Image (cartoon, rainbow, N blue to C red):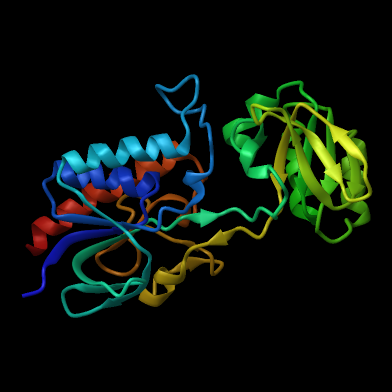
Amino acid sequence: MKEIYECIIIGGGFAGLQASIQLGRYKRKTLVIDSNYGRSTYCKSYRNILGWPSGISGLQLRELGKKQATEYGISFLEDKVITVQKNDTTFEIVTEKGLTFDAKTILLATGLLDRIPDIKHIFDCLGTSIYVCPDCDGYEISDKSVLVLGAGIAGANMALEIHYWTNKITYINHDGEELETDVLNQLRHKGIIYQKEKIIEIVKDQDSNFKGITLKNGDILLADRAFIGFGGNKIHNELAKQLGVELLNNKHVIVNPRTKETNVSNVWSAGDLVAHSQQVTIAMGEGTQAAVWIHKRLLEIN
């Protein structure tokens, strides 16, 4: 007889890990399937999390979470889920490696990936001196000179948003369309310098601290920090679509605000896949909340 998990969590980022810890404390038979390649794997320092005033890297936090969950009996598999199908009372999950699993409940925590062009050394500085999220790291650029590396309107909006923290901003439109006149006027009004040119390389020191960029035309622009705003982020909603989960504007998953359950019975979602503010702490909270209600449902159906 095939083994049936009480819950399978798809995605081992912060939402999935936090949910797994909570389900482990409920002694629920849970499997986490994770490709080990997500947004949280490449940020080298989160500084806005309670208890980590000096920052903690995404990889370190993931490792700590996995270790904690394993101690509660949670199983982990490094693989990628290809299909999810709802049967009468369970879900059938098939992975890229050809493995098949059955589960009574599902938590989708597949998140999203930022679009980051292939610019030399950009990942070396990400999370320490090149940032993605103004809500997370706007504080880090207070009164510093900043380059916004971006594309079209997405980069322009990033430059305008971070103006709250500093007025020393240059926006480099790397691979986007030319800006419309009203957007250019907004940038000028804020004193933001604008240039449309390909970025070839990040200039960094031996400790991988951002120092500037080299442009295709040969110019070198120096600054203290950088933000990226390329737009076109990839939301991993393929499995949600397979299950008929309701999406906001065909992108992020819509959940019950209280329970985090989707419109599909026994399917929950948490983290950056959900329509919410993209914060580590929010993802963790949603993971916990989803796990609480998954446990309650299992009490009913077991």
